[in-house]
Each structure stands twice: as structure tokens, then as C-alpha cells.
Length: 356
Image (cartoon, rainbow, N blue to C red; front, side):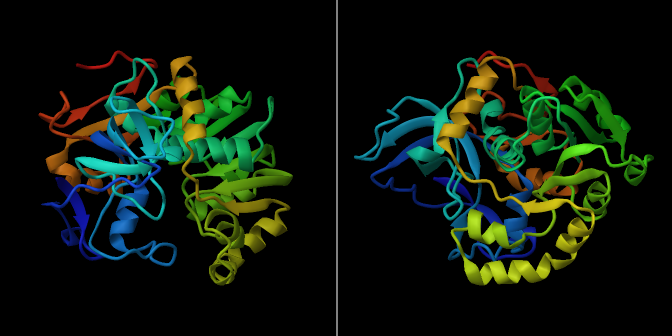
């Protein structure tokens, strides 16, 4: 099968499309004919070698974290899926393998694609939407009428986070450029701050919770606008000890490293009276099933910025790395009706008619 392979860390030239054997499913795996894959910042960071402290697999390996497709075989112990099912999944963190014509994934990491949603839109959901759901519902415990601040609302995670926060009943303030303002308002944002002209630090301490999708100076400014006793969850700044203990299997040595590298941001948060947590989401078929229900009910829409053919996956990753994407970037296999050329899209309604 054809797959996008990481041969060496660093520059993009260290990864390429090449023929490799198809994966063999384990007893609790499903084997999927991949129709579309979603791209995320974690993909180019992994390619660059920036995640080696967390995960250092043997090379070469197939890259990719999320996909949608059709089940072609199941392991002997699989009970949730059958051949012919339309599924989407965020693969296990220590496995990867989505950027290929076929992928194997544990059945507990997958869910059925909602009726009416095509594979291209489904592939854009797992990683970003799971991150938003787990951050807002589980880590922040967002409640109705609370005020939440979400930085970077027009990005892949941000577009889902705005909608999930509204579904949870919160009042949502987000940042966007003038180019992204119409998009985030269409998703339900109550207030939009233009990060190119407005100074966050002048807002005053008014927010009950914060989701940081930008990091750096933006996170520092967020800490100043949170109410004392509130909490900020980041997926873009620096990991802290709980990241290793809760999200990475209790790795105490790594927790010590994260304690050191996060000391500055934790001190700034403490001085502001704000809790700080860096979250690494976990694959969950059950959470994906809940997201599928929200899509089917029309509570959650998928925003796709560009769709590329699989032959141009390197160019697609370069576009994600540029930071210009509003919403998600998706790559489709040759079997997809959209594989002929790159296409730009806008917000996709849910449910959406399946393309033949």
C-alpha cells in the first residue's frame, strides 16, 4: 500500500510517499480502508522531531493521527464493528499510521461516522474535536452561564471548541483576525477580539475558564484576564507535571523534566491566582460517539479550509505548518470523488449528504 513515511526527523525531505506492507490487525483491531485523513499541528511537529521526549518510535514509520474510512476486516476479539462499517478514529498515541491507504486501530478508539456525514468531513473531527471536548468538559468542567475565553477560535481545535462551549451553555469570547471574525461568529462566539489590534491585558479579570490554543505571549495575557481561582488549559504552551502523570501513563522522570520547563508559566499563573494545566487528549471511541451524536443533531459543524489529494500530502502539511488554515485541512485518497484537485471549502452543515 502507499503511505506517507517518516524516515528521519527534521526537514520535510525526511518524509515521503512510498510503498509499504499493509498493517496486520491485532485481536481487538479493526482494519480500515482509509478514505480521508485529517492534518494537525502535531503531525508536522512529530515530523520535525519536536515530540521525541514524549514518544520515540523506531523509524521508519507511517505518520498520521486521524482518519475516516470503511472497515474491511476485524480482529477475532472485536465486538463493536463489522466489515462495511463507516468509521472515524483518532489512532493510539504510540501507534500513528493514519497517512496510508489502510490503517489498523483499536476498536475502542473508533466510532461510527454519523449518517449523512461524508468521509472528508468525518476525517476532520477526531483529534481536534476530542481535544476541545476533553478540555472544556473534563478539565475545565465548564458550566452554563460561565464565561470562557478561547484563544485562536478560527483554528482547527478552536472551531470545535466554540461550538462545544456553546453546547455546554457557556458565554464564549474568542480571538480572531478580521478575516476570521465572520467564521467564529457563525459558530456561536458571543464576543470576538481582534488579536491584531486589541490588547487582551486591558479587558480586566472577567473569565471563569480559559482554553489556550496559541501559547506564548497570548497565554501570558490570558492569565491576567482570568478570575482568581479559575483555570486555564493549554494545548499549545509547555507541558507540566500532570501532563506526564495523567496523560502519558505516570512517567515520573518525564514529570520532573516538565516541572522544570514549566516552572516559569506555573509561577506566573500562581501569581495571578489561576490554575494551569497542559492537556494531551486521549483517544476515545465513546467520546467520538458523543461527538457523532452532536453532529447528527446539528449541534456541531465541521469547518474545512482545504482538501488536498493524497499525492500532495507534503504540501498539505506545509500549509498547516504555515498557520494560515481557518478550520481543518484534509487529505483524500484517490478513491474519493474529491481527489482530483485541491479544493477550498467553508463551514459544512451537519449532517451533510454523503458524496457518492
